[in-house]
Length: 399
Image 1 (tube, one colour):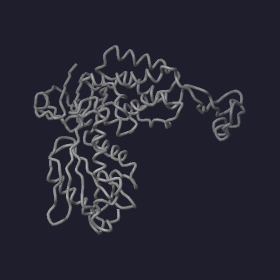
Image 2 (image 1 turned 30 degrees about the horizontal axis):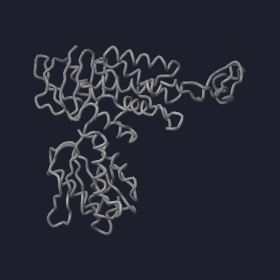
Image 3 (image 1 turned 45 degrees about the horizontal axis):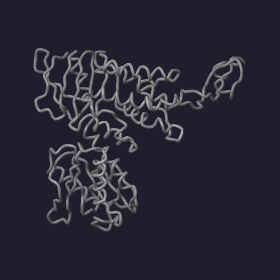
Image 4 (image 1 turned 60 degrees about the horizontal axis):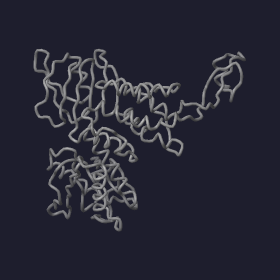
């Protein structure tokens, strides 16, 4: 096993012997940037992503600066604000694959403790007798006038429901990933066997729709985690036909998605609504498109604008960008929200009446504290009693 471990902020990279196909496959995942050093040796550099990739006998992991447990929480909450810290059991894990497997196994065991949930599903079949409803169009097209078998559709009480399909598919995919202790693999296999008769979704298939209800309440934490696994995990052949498994996330996108969801939740009690990736134009001829990460609108007008910045790489450019947003939206204040320590406080812009507020969030804080930081930010940007705070002009440019 050729194993490489890197930190997200690693400045020296890691030297590794690779084939050209392996380097191309790694590059395609985005997890690292391979650079040739000659003689079959390559240097792997972090690329703004975190995750793990297995290509044949090559195992590469880039550890997020916030830790595995916090990464899984941020990912889960961004996809579903019902996601909670206790949905993952990764606090003691230092590697991504075992952390995911442990969390999924624990939640699946809780979900199935009272038995496998069943429900009514529609079944299309060809039978020697009529059951349910005849599918006349299929009967005519498939049977060419033959009376038997009959193409029918009927409802059957079965475990093969959407919730179980999602859960079993996630268990099956997690069981196949690298770096798992045999005990974790055995737990996943046992849980998979309990869902016998449930169809596994093919790779690339869209998960079936389901809705939270009283009946599936005990499944919810497991389903949230299973959806995360299905959303981020891939197992496609790489260049040259290598066997590949990957769980790769763009950390800047993770932070942006988390902030958008958390602000939307924090501002839910205010008049108006919160939009992510708000589209408008900088110029009156509507040729220069701008897309602030988060805008809260009341009465159809923007009242607050936020932009997520995972890296503190170009603070000047960040300020220029926010100045453009505030000018186009007609706002006196804009919020730059950083995922790490940054100089906080207002930056008044000369001759404009606009100030740019820099606000760092501590992503290493416990999830409850992190969400509390976002609620404080929301309260300051859009006070509950005054939704027009910060409006600079009577009318903003149309979106």
